Image (cartoon, rainbow, N blue to C red; front, side, top):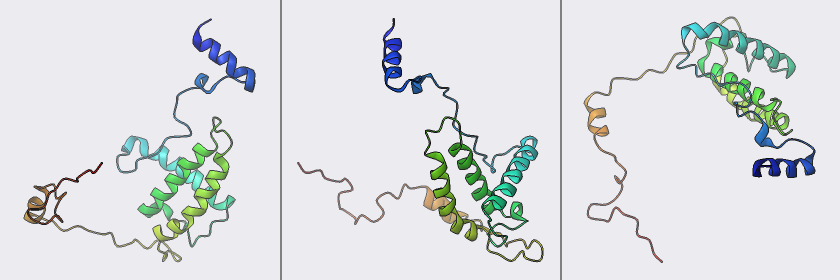
Length: 168
């Protein structure tokens, strides 16, 4: 018998189960969707899965339209929040969870409510009202001048040591 087999047999004597090292090393839960890099070819499937989950969670937990409107998918920040919650939900109820996932999910949902409200600022009661997107001006030379230095010690007075001294 190998050392690994001995260790597994020893652990099984206490729990009556295989050790956690015998479980798949696949990611727990589902996969997180990076909406920024999502390819068009994958978009329809991801949107459909998220829509099904959003419809289920809003009914199951009675999340009001004032928090998640019917046009939620047209509000980028709301998509990101709901997508993250879906990923957390899938991980919490994964079959490999030790039993703490469901309570963790409910804690995350409670914490997320204010963020959901901020992600959707209201205003779509009579149909979708697009939010005015934030824009960025071209910083030009100011950006180039700033990024040419690290700025790690910009608050250090001239002539002062930039190293932290260690004392025994």
